[in-house]
Image 1 (spheres, helix red, strand yellow):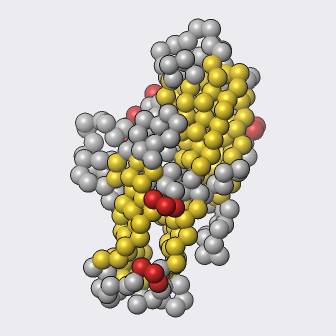
Image 2: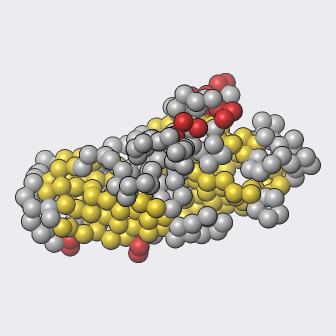
Image 3: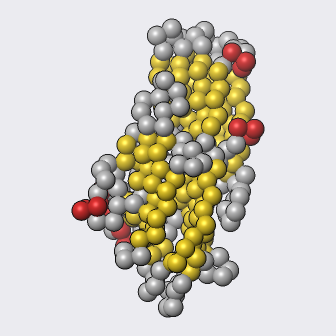
Length: 279
C-alpha cells in the first residue's frame, strides 16, 4: 500500500511557502512583478500544466487590465479534471465563472503591447510602457477572488504588488508559522499544487506542481519508505531568482527500498506525475 502525504510546507524553518508546499527557496507565490530600467513592466505568472501554446494574453485598454487565460488539460487518466486559469475577469458582467481575478494598472495611461513566452508552466510577460505620468513603481497590482475581490478577505487596495494579501506577506515579522494558500486564478479544477489518488491495486497516483522545472532538472528518490521529488527551476528572463522545490509526495506502508525505475514518472509543462506501484 502507498499512502499520500499530508499537505504541509516542506521548506526549512523561516521560509514561508505561499502557494506551493514543495517550494524551498526562491520567489514566493505564483506571481512576480518587476519594473525594468526602461520602465516597461515584467510579470512572471505560474500556470502549471498549461502547454506552451495554451496561454492567451489580452490587453484591455479601456479597463487598464492585463487579461490572462489558459487551460491545463488532463494529461493522465487519473487526473481529477482539467484546470482553467482565469486571471481575466474585470467586471461581473464579463464573468466566465469560477474564481475570477484581474491584474490592473494604476497609471494614467496604459501599455501599448507586450512580448510573452511560456515554458515549463510559467508565463513571462514584458509590457511595453506608454505612461505619461508614472507613479512610483510598480504601477500594476493584482486582485483575485470572485469578481475581482481579494480571495483572502483583505482590502484589495492594500494588496501587495507581488500577489500576497497584506495579512499574509511572508516578510511580515508578525507571522508565526508557514502559510499555504490556493492558486486564486484557477476557475475550474484543483487550486492545490498536490493531487493524489489511491489506486485499486494499492498503488498511488500523484500530481505535483513545480512550475519552471524542466524535466531534466527533476529527481525522484526513495528513502526510508518515503518517495521524494526534487526540482530546480532556473531563473529566466527578468526573474529575480531561480526556485528550488523539494518534498515527500508519498509514504510506503512498508519501509522498503522501492527501485525508482519502478515508479512511472511524467514531467510536462511544470507538472510532475508519478504512478507508484503497490509494495
